[in-house]
Amino acid sequence: MGDPVGMGEVYLPTRDSKEAYASACNEEITISAARYAMELRTVEERRDFIATWPESRRNALKAKIKTLWEKRND
Image (cartoon, rainbow, N blue to C red):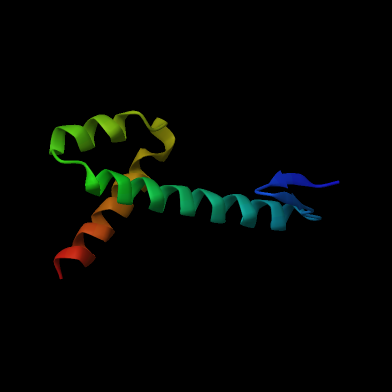
């Protein structure tokens, strides 16, 4: 048995593989949220959205938004 993932299951045999998988998932979630935040119409809406994130992950979200914003404006 493995952990449920998408339409199937995946078996992560080691602690390192579990941590790498969790890190990759968190990165993809953060990227998706940053893109969503950039699509919001106002700064206030963006701030409200960021405030809904767990405090421990807000800085990562803000950093990703900043990176995407800079790429967009280059």
